[in-house]
Image (cartoon, rainbow, N blue to C red; front, side, top):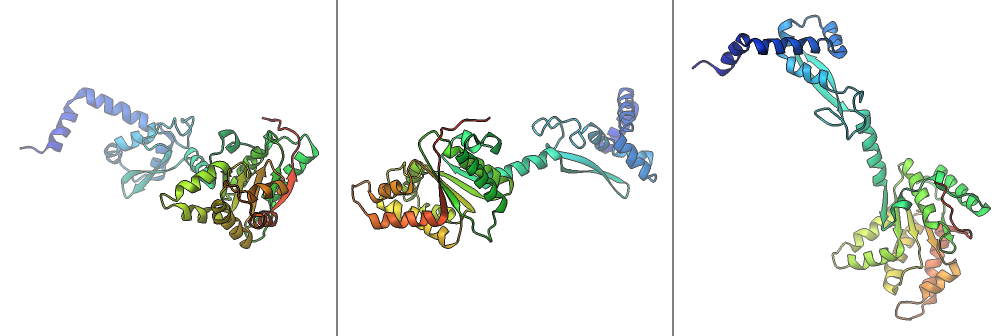
Length: 311
């Protein structure tokens, strides 16, 4: 029996329609600037080499090079999305090497940055807050804006800088400030964790049942910058206050790792809240220890005026 390839070649030679299509494709391929450059640099390539690799050359011709014909990563037209083709020659064999395109690189960098900010139960508006949206219409807001800029500018794992304890009535934009800070730190590839305290309490209680409590505590002990949003809004137990919150703050105080807080309470009011358990017990000494750790880790600053969105 005649080999299949030999039969196919004979068919290609005898089929006029195919020959016409082949010549048209070849003519189109040879008009491509990248292919012309390859042929100019490698005069040793013969016509038979071009014919032999015509399908590969056609793939290269049809591809978007350096994102020229692609509007974005989702709209990439290439066989391998997010990768741009490059022609290579090994002896007289032509091949295509694909490299990440600019859209792919930008997408990966953005995902890497996003992974730096962990947030538990924080609203989308807070997670997407920007410095440009920060309301600085009052002196106290300007001071907070300066504090954020200075913290981000001078942050270093080798030099401790206190966080902030931002307190004031509901609606003053305290949580929004944490979102701004986390996104500014993200630009410098600094890991942060934003935690909404009432849900954090419930999360830690649930973690006892699936044996993940200790690993979560260890994570929040060691993350570069930790942020507790709305501390004091939770119903607290002595166990959570001492074994979870106290343990995290103690570690971060000893290792000089900054913490930011927001609260409706000033520190005296928060101490009274922490002293009274959900069972009605009053433990002023243990609550005082938590407050001392907060003072070691952050600087109190009050917000009075309601938040105005500049976005």
